[in-house]
View 1 (cartoon, helix red, strand yellow):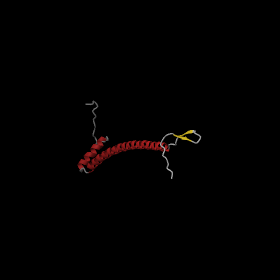
View 2: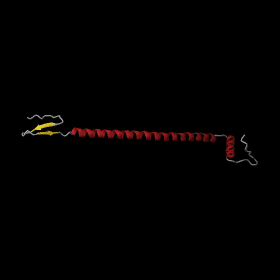
View 3: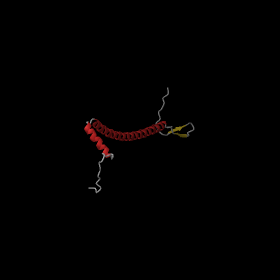
View 4: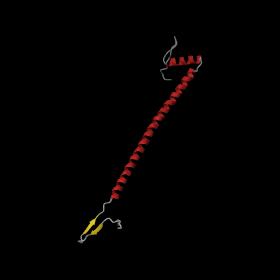
Length: 121
């Protein structure tokens, strides 16, 4: 059985029978694979960073949309409460409310006059 020699030198000098010296450089396959592995890891890290930043941006955008919708909901709930209160008014209070809203829209009783203070005081 023959033993295989593991050569770890970068350059190997070989002499043949005619005393000619040749320098042989072994092919470094590990370097190629290492370069590909490092390149793949760097590309994956850049992609992961891009996706992370993109997700944070989308979360922030959706959070602002949610805040706007929550504001609309609270405004609508206040309006609903006001309408519920109006619906539950007694007949006398209901007439006063209707009269108030009609005056705001410019309606008057027969023979009623409205005076507007134009002096600003």
